[in-house]
Image 1 (spheres, rainbow, N blue to C red):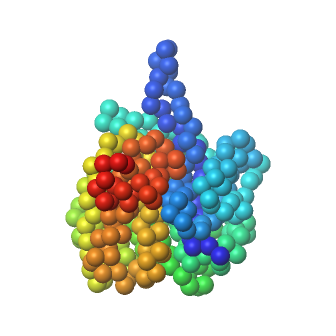
Image 2: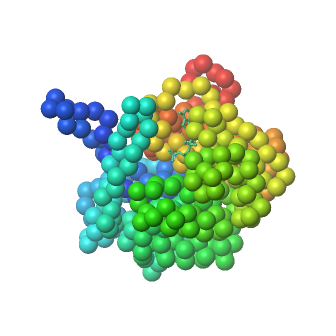
Image 3: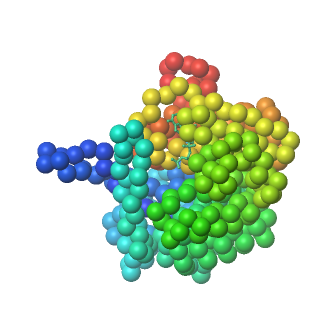
Length: 322
Ligand code: ATP
């Protein structure tokens, strides 16, 4: 039995922060992929998780599988295919620390997963099914994701969705918009960033974005994150804001995924349905997720930066000992 099963991309992020004596970029290889970060946060906070995806038989594929295993995620649903190479992403930083992405992914192994290769038992055995949009950019993984979402909805249980917009991966912005809108229409719980809401609808007000998600897409619980400005959480009954604790960010990689995974971990542990949470509970869920995400920015990388539950609770209590 699993709490959450996710489908999606697995890739290596090469982060080019430094240069060598000749001035060439030196790159650090970080195992990455949003659904992996999301599940790793859930596992860190005691939930049972499983992954559906594809990597190559190259060394990076093995590194990704081992990283997820060590994070406590069931990896038997990850296929290894010798005909494709594990997807590689190159991340560069501007002077303000903001990231730009380029992807070696034509095709990357993650895009070559087909529905027939999915271990459907991992969906049958999970309470929640999670997906994003990097598995909607190309075929056959787009059809695999859509059929998996349909399968999970028929089976019952909640669907959670994080758009995770990466424009360089799409042929056109309109295609990205169309697929994200489809994802929103399938989901019970959505974590979206203020930038994604602006891209989709030109909406810069988080309350209006959340209202749109609930009224037009039938989303039961919406979480709009706003980087260092925190997050806005709402359902039909109530709404709450979560502020960011004071941190010294060095790398925001995965912060949004860690926010989503931590929030869903809190929700599952509460034993409540997304639409049942009252204002106090939304505030508590937001505070936990925002604190976990913000603390993760103080450490480099995605999965290794997820703080322990103890560290999150200490920070929430305002302890200086974190
Ligand atoms: P990602 O970069 O993973 O795609 P995102 O755009 O989905 O992230 P953000 O809104 O940037 O998500 O951030 C999610 C959460 O991470 C925020 O709600 C906040 O708690 C934390 N966070 C992000 N950036 C910072 C920062 N600079 N300082 C403190 N906390 C941050």
